Image (tube, rainbow, N blue to C red; front, side, top):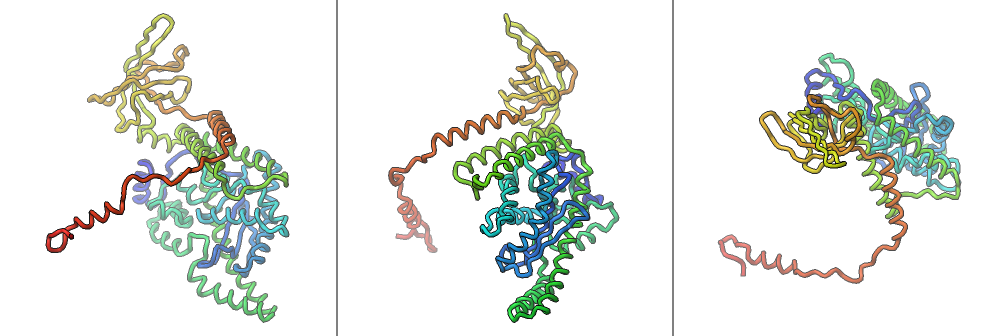
Length: 484
């Protein structure tokens, strides 16, 4: 959490309503997201009780499994849900401008949604329609929790990047509570929060609902099925359906409110970049998965996992640089951290030695923190063609005095002049450099597929057991003498 959000939280607590911490949205939101609402029975193994799918306010479809422990019933429910999902994926395929995106009501729901896609993709051969749909959207698994992807995201985390409430990050994972903070101040915020916390934030139903409503009906339903009492089983199915439909609808209404609050913010440059990357990733994967001869990898092999790690690290650097330049909240936080140097130009000296031109700037910054050191290469925010190299800096009574050499753009017009206030920061990694580095990494992995083998046990030059035993012998006893 940065200083900007810390201050905003104090203001939100004082005002009784959430405070925006940015003017732009650092992530994209699809015009047709796949809203996935999984419900599992509390205390059970991760088996679905119900699965809601929607794209907006009026098209919620719910599939229910009345016996979560029954694997056949689980696949039957997934096939019904797949019928709803199929139309959404078809719309993504037909319109290249649509962003494929899976939206969930919580972080736990995102992981459960990925488990649903995994189970679809690797379903038994008899469930071919389920396998086909899973193959088409399995790309979400490798894109989850990537800085440069919003193929899967949960709404509480998304709201936390736009607003600050008067509570901590853990409490902000409850979507209903966050939405209460987004309402206008009425002096009753803590009462409303307590009322919202009465409903579960997780993917499971509440223990009270389980013990009093669901579990008795579920056991009675199993008994009715065992004794072949069709009428009683049908009655219990209707009662279970009514309870679960209400649970899914409540979460769906919260998601609609959250998406409306998110869409108030305009897209930033980083959001548009992420959207383009996600769409390209989805299209490339669709082309690969459309060929039945191509296998879908379940999990990551050793070499592929290393490549994924490298790619995620490069993407983190790219998205961080874009966010710092295009999102007001990130830019303000970077100024406070000293990652963006805000300085006034005190002097500009030009020297020429034969054909070499040297341009030296003297800058003065009054920031409390500066994340620079001699030799750092920085660029001017705005016209990025001007690059600087920090030669030296030192503290004065007026602030931090910085000497920087202009290394790029020496002959170009528009250079900073004396008296100007400039902002400089580390250069941003571009997509070309990322792809080039990844190509080099992949070539190295392919050329060295045989891992080195250890020829024998690793030699150890010290005896840890003897050291511990000797230390124990020297430990004082209760009478002040060492043990023999």
